[in-house]
Length: 175
Image (tube, rainbow, N blue to C red):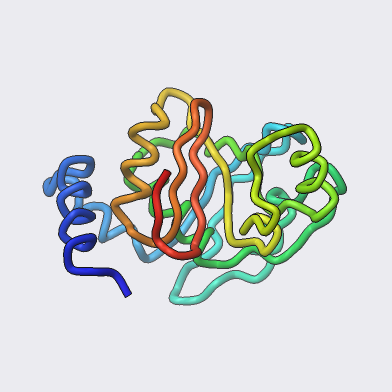
């Protein structure tokens, strides 16, 4: 459960990042959820509506899960729909048609261990292993702005790195 203090902070951050004049048009776009993705490892692109008329499109969600697969093992896995919705909401606030550059979606145990062996700071129990996290960037948008937008939702963890932002739908935390 989100605390009153974190709720007020999220509202304040959203007001700064996303002015009231633009919010009304954002709300009206919620009859359809879309994503425009570019996987930087496989060079694949996908622009797709995955929710419309009040329902998720299973075929579209499958295509999204495919592009978010582990590029190291080519393994496709479930991606929590809340992650897709959060990405879509972030994309709507940015208000650009520029693709979200996917750095890491689902991560297989083999790839996660490989990254650990290289000394990368990846958790042994990474939420990427469970399809609960995505690392992404957007050309022309700073990681500071992206992480601020993601934090405004208070929907899970947000990590800001030099070249990308991590989001997940685990507990709310920031780094």
